Image 1 (cartoon, helix red, strand yellow):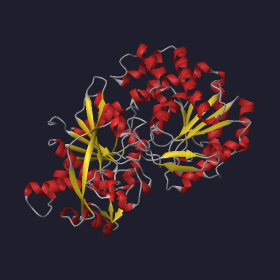
Image 2 (cartoon, helix red, strand yellow):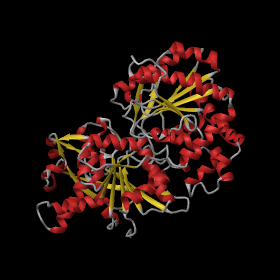
Image 3 (tube, helix red, strand yellow):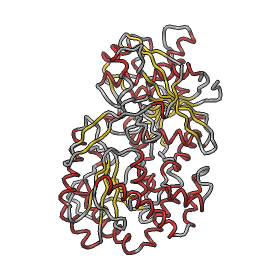
Length: 564
């Protein structure tokens, strides 16, 4: 039935629409963008993920910025079609039954990519097992390992049950999916009718597997004790080959993926370099991330490009022609997108923001290494800026992981700064950051701020979404921005470089550089040289929009990994 499908793309999370909360942030949104571009480009691919019945979580913030989490209620059959196929896997000596739901991603020429969402909520399962596909990144180590077994082992079995017998490439989007390699080894054993694994078996699996690593942050690489692995997965022949998955006495999902993949990549050129240092014995390439233009462009810019660049959806490289669009048409589209955002902000935060004021946007996961409070390093200096430069307003959004106490404290510090800036600068922090809000923010602010601690930002994609909408970035040189930043052309770099004294910490230098760029370059340009500001906006679209898109990214995967 599916003999033409050659590539299977596995990801613990995939984001397609905001009302279907099967994603937490960048990794899942990237997966959704990858599938959509594959549909646009008619690539023979199928997606596999989990249904996450309770979502990641619904975020509520009180007046002090204290985050509380609630399960997300959503109706699966509003978006998905339940299929009759069933498979089982053994977890903790119990048979866990799985079904799947189909989502169809339709491309610009109506080509369809099927994505399957695995679901353990079946009456045949125990109450405990029925919850295994409820929470994205929830529960303890045991829960996480069970989920990863469902994705990797159950995912391969479900593909076979659905009729996908001719998959030649299995793409693991992060290490969460790497147990699929063990299932492929098990398939090799069954074919050979042997009870031991040979090097030929391992090489046969390696030829089929591709691994994309997304983070240099240690917490992003899952590890499980061997006692827990044996308890959950039982004694299996494939688990006797500890040299392919064991590191420091643990099941290391990243090393399993590295050892069973013929092609491995990081998600930006710099991240590829960092990954080669982290995993020195492995050949690691890089393919810089991209975003799906049809998803992340605001309606005003879609309408503008439909008039001036009608072929943009089929060929994103045509965004380079944005340089020929009249400047006032660019500004008019931006102003409408900004009005849409400001109306939303005022409605949901009562911040009283003004569409004519210079607006800074910052929205991403609230994690310490992303340094979301850097803008408030010197509150007194910040208070003086509007007096000298003109009105400034700031829009924040972002969730902290439920178990990340430091991330939650980061949000509280931003709320504290918001109160201290009352009467000087309007600040809003919007609840429950999701894809819909992300689209509003990346299209509606005047500059996109990003302040990660290098080299911990593997790539980042929010600035790419902003660039498509003509929004310049003001960002630390890390991740994709090293490749995308042309100073004063596509935006501005936050870097010390003579701005500040040498006897300061890196954080202090970055904060002072940020202030200097705002005071001396960015805000004056916005208020006093609109034509030059629009010129930068055009170059964001023409240079960065035409390259940092998921069409280009998927084409690179095709050339470097899928059909090689």
